[in-house]
Length: 284
Image 1 (cartoon, rainbow, N blue to C red):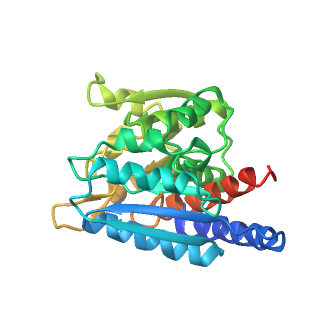
Image 2: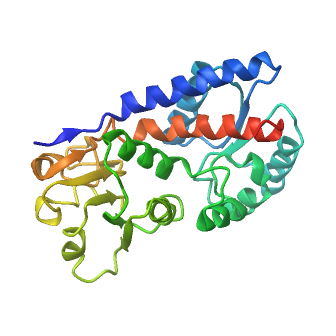
């Protein structure tokens, strides 16, 4: 019998802990501050930014949104990042991706002070994750680990398969599982006989961006299945990379879409911003 991992419930717990710690910081005269930069009118990005503003309010952070027009130049964007690097009340800087095609996201990420890089995309932070000595973790993989921990499943010694090799989810996800002593394999579009690999996974993390790609014949009996996908099915309905209805009865635990990994990403952003504020004020 499968059990659903309730991302909304775990997310609430993380945010509540951040709110309580923020109250303690405020007694010392410190309010964590997050700056969110959005360029252009991408509807999905607009929704994400609104959700981040709402989360900041819930946990007691100071937040500023910088909504820049579509035709913003690289120099204008770079100058804003440099200005925010120098502002003491801003502890975290987040540039909402994707950027319009004429802008270079790598250039922007590299400009953010690593100690304010609450997305953990800067090469310094990526390197720190590789060696296991980090201040921040990328929000989605960190959220996945929180969900796995919420089940009580011990990762040590388990075979974990990560589907997808993106810099934002797949690669850091593999490193976090490895840091907790899983035996990790990454599969991707060029993997031969992919299903034979996924069928061996005690923990299967799907992050490939293909609607309902993972079917029951690709899943081991009793596996923990984490669906990072945010896709649309043939009827335009939101779904994940996993065929939930087909797969659920083979799992011990499974995340739904929506309501699984999604809520965790913003909660972990709040956690990272709190950590950044503590480090910058000499508390951590």
